Image (spheres, helix red, strand yellow):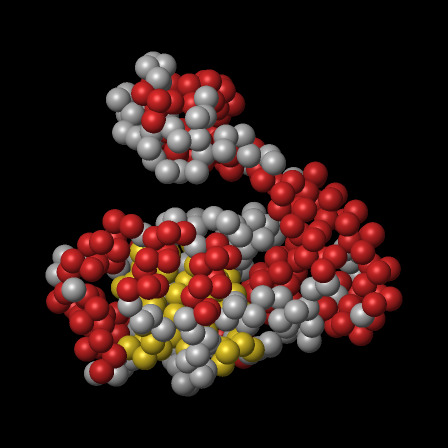
Amino acid sequence: MQQRQMGSLGEQVSLLGFGAMRLPTINGENSKIDAPEAIRMMRHAFDNGVNYVDSAWGYHGGNSELIVAQALRDGYRQRVQLATKSPTWLLETAEDFSSYLDRQLQKLETDHIDYYLQHGLGRDRWLKYKELGVFAAAQRAKDQGKIKHYGFSFHDKAETFQEIIAEYPWDFCQIQYNYLDVDNQAGRQGLQAAHAKGMAVVVMEPLRGGRLAAGLPSQISEMLQRGERELQDQVVQRHPAEFVDVHRFIFEHGNEFTHPVEWAFRWLADQPEVSLILSGMSTMAQVEHNLAICSLPGMVTGNMSPEERNLLAAVAKAWQARIKVNCTDCKYCMPCPQGVDIPACFSRYNTAAMFDAWEQGKKSYSRLSEEQHDASHCIACGACEAACPQKLSIINALKELDAALR
């Protein structure tokens, strides 16, 4: 297993971290974890070099931390860096921070948490968090040894991320980042800014919720394969040893082309600012696949050739060209007088189009319909279009997506 430095913290972690948000479940019920299988999967990962596991208060209906605790028994806790998250949305006072932390220590059967995060900071939660004065409570917890390193996970706009890292000496952060999300949320600029401050950066959603792993649209899959054919001769001639190391997984499994997961992980491993790739794994096959990829000798900083980086950039551009509506989710169009959740409608439409996930998109859109927030309630009043800084034809787009997702 390849290892990385955690920013300026002076600690090494495995390139691959085990995310405990998508553990195997019973009968598809999210809160009912298949405990024996989940523990078997985590311990198999730990036995093969993974030394970082990430959970949270709310994962699997509050049961993820309990199963992680069981997986860390029998001496595993001493071998593994434990990360979990404070439920930011439940904090009403600074004292709540300490109360939830103590309950998590009990659930996790430990006296300290190695990497403790404020969960899902965004603009609103960040402002509330500052108002409550949670920083002081976090520092007390560090002084008491209950927390070793303190950070946050993030889902919001880039400017909010920059503000957050400027106002507190965080040890680390966790951001959504992959070759499609270079300019989304914190993005590459956020990654580099955090790294410049000495922060460790943990990457979540390296596969965009699995969408970069399997079931790629035929256009994207063919583009990757065509590009790889064109590049192979060049790479072999220029870097024969590195090519064999990086692509050993292909040769050992008799595949003609690089697996999409390997492309995604290699792209992240190529960047020195990335400290750890966090992957939520639901099956033992996924664990073994990710272990094999992240143990390749070539999975190091600078492993990709310029031509390979250009290929993935072109693939990302082609993927983004499939977007139906260039909505930036600024929410200037909201609230809609008729209750239409315009950004949510566009998000479902774009996701379905980008990934050829029309059936999933229709199911997701139906939930908006149940809540009376779907596009069918639009009366073409034009208030949204007058407010849109992108000057989008929102009314026509809403009609189009309602017909496509109905």
